[in-house]
Structures are given as C-alpha cells and as structure tokens.
Amino acid sequence: GESVGLHLPTLSVQEGDNSIINCAYSNSASDYFIWYKQESGKGPQFIIDIRSNMDKRQGQRVTVLLNKTVKHLSLQIAATQPGDSAVYFCAENIPGMAGTALIFGKGTTLSVSS
Amino acid sequence: GAVVSQHPSWVICKSGTSVKIECRSLDFQATTMFWYRQFPKQSLMLMATSNEGSKATYEQGVEKDKFLINHASLTLSTLTVTSAHPEDSSFYICSARIPLPGTDTQYFGPGTRLTVL
Image 1 (cartoon, rainbow over the protein chains, first blue to last red):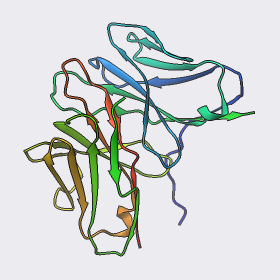
Image 2 (cartoon, rainbow over the protein chains, first blue to last red):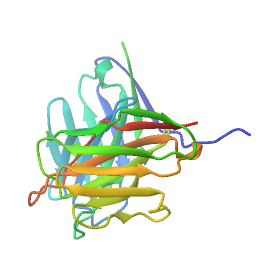
Image 3 (cartoon, rainbow over the protein chains, first blue to last red):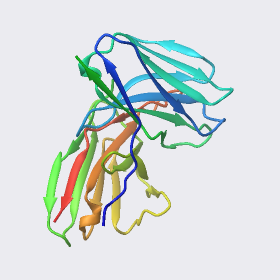
Image 4 (cartoon, chains in turn cyan, blue):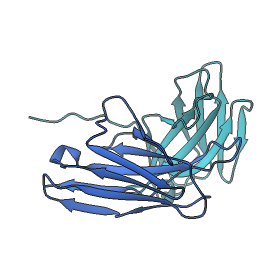
C-alpha cells in the first residue's frame, strides 16, 4: 500500500526576498530556544538562539522573535540566498531537568529560487 | 561553535547484523550526549540521553536492548543497533551539550545514514 508520512510545511521565496519562518512551541516553561538549519543528508546546524527573557535577537542576516504570550517563535532571514535553501527547525529547552534534550518542532522547508 | 563528529557517515548492512555508530566531541568534553533518529521528511526524534559513566536514559518506546548506548569517556558515545532490520533504516544523529553553566546549546554531528537490507 501507499505509505503516508508527515509533510513539512514549505516556504518558497525568490532570491533577495526576506523570509519568515514560524514555529509554535509547546511548553510555557521553556526558557531557551534555538533555530537550526538542516541541509539534505547533514546534521542540524546552529543558526541563532534566544532566551525567554528576551523578545528579539539579531545575528548576521537573521533575526529571531519570541512571543511568549502566544508561545510563538519566528526566524527572519534577510536577503535570502539560494544557499539558505534547507529545512529549518525550532527547538525548545525545558528548564529544571539536568541533561534534558531539546524538543524539536516539525520543521519548515525553505526553497529559494534565483 | 563546538565540533561533533560521527563515524561512519553511512553504512549498509544485512538484516540481523549489528552496527556501531560513534559520536565524538572534538574540542570539548561532553558529560551528556543525545541520540536522535530522523526518518525522511520528518523531524528529529529523541531516542536516548547518554550520560558519561552511567546508564543511558531511553525515551518511551525505544528498546534499550536493541539500541545499546555506551558513553565511556567524556568525548565519546556509541550507539549500537543490534540485530538490525530494514525498519531500523534511518538517519541517526547525535548531539552534545557544552557543560558550562547557562549554556544549553547543543551541537549536532553530521549524522549516520543506516540502510539495512
């Protein structure tokens, strides 16, 4: 029979556009959030992080916004380039438990066309 | 950022054999490492938390006798898939956390693609 898998949301943009990738996290107690980029066949690569006492953090071409009221996280990529094409995951950390792993979101596939 | 390596990067094995995957932290000591499994077009699923010098903590539904984890040193954790079957074919990824106060960032290895025939 036909197999059914989970389909990651896809965002398609033109080179040079700004991209916004959204993520809803699950636990209101989470105190630390990370965005990872994963290219095909590779492990996740750290992009940017933010702690819960902040609502915005900027890096090189990337900005992370945190809205704790609605448990929402977003990643903004300025002047998107073809090399930005990948799957992007948000991850949250729940405090108070030593050695806990990150909880990953489902991921968004970013496709950049030139 | 910190560097985490995995070996091998890919492996093909026959059904019923065992496969060992190594995860190393190259420029820092990691008291805790994590093992994830990722199926195509899906997110990372935590399998177990590997603690140096003690038993690993497995997530619900992960068979500890099938997925043996050994964290014998501060820079090396191994995952052995015993009696592998085709349904174990997946992308296995490890990560390590830098053991500093206030540091929660995890750095990931490049992953190991396991194909069981």
